[in-house]
Image 1 (cartoon, one colour):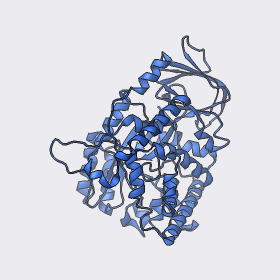
Image 2 (cartoon, helix red, strand yellow):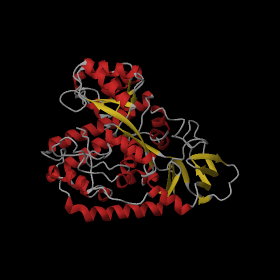
Image 3 (cartoon, one colour):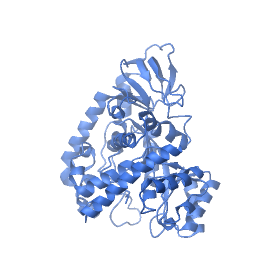
Image 4 (spheres, helix red, strand yellow):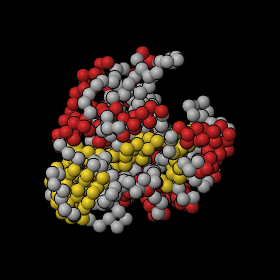
Length: 466
């Protein structure tokens, strides 16, 4: 049911926003005074009325002397948390939708800053791309060079069976793709639904040899014998939907069976509750997309696609809606049972699927996780420390500690009291660059206006003409 979506826009020159922000501040040392820190360490002891010094792109000190000539940010009554991590995204990058030929290249170009703004505005400072393409490497490099202000990006290559791109239908082909992915610079492998059993197992075995973690779907071939999919080094299940697609028994006994095989294998779990919730809403009515508050920030071509080519609304019926509702309920049950079993869970949204808007969707996911039974602290852990641990970069991000990268979110209210307070953003540090709420609001307003202006230029039905 999930889909991978690519978005494009006309490229245009615009100021380097990260440099502009630094020029306004005049230096690269900041001090947040009188702030309440929620460090998200295992102990997670609150540090109240703290002084945090940020120099260059790292946290220099907490409750130490203030350097001269630092830019002061008043944090009284505010709450500082680590930058948020979305562990399941499909980022938008340059591509061509029309017939290719030698030297042609892309014909639709992504304005990377417009797109990455959606993450920055929501305090999402790291994203895990689960359908990586070569264009995503270039996108990431633009961020690293400082030409674009955006999140850190981890890249997984998707390997599927059948006739898809990066397809593998034999064990030898699967192993070869893993080796090529490693040499090309991918850090992770994503296994997908149409792999046959032997190729699936070979891919995971080769990934272990190449020291690449594996995340993904439970291939359809394992329906009726799901346990056989849980082999050593299958690191994370990317959707609750992967379990519901393996059975027609949506009950606690089946959930406990899935939890046991997951825990016994040392596999982590990404519930991705927002996926089926949004699908069920769209099956009822496309108004659920049209009236999203964040819809105006989505590029007009994607706005068009989500309305005129919506696979979840097409051919919908009361029976289909009821089925989606039953999946939503089962996924909530899975979260409760997996929590009881002590299985690590991380937050991911499948951003890019219709109705799931990058950045904004992570706050929706956190609310759904709390509604499903996680505490507010557990939900925050699922979007900070635990993702950093699984990505093996917890020495760099995921907590508010001296020496970590300055990926931070300053909130007006305490998210431990109400998870919805993660939306109440006063400002964001992205790799040490401070973006105030006022700046974010201005940038979002400009983007919404730009999208309105360009709306008539884009029609998904005419995409092959671009």
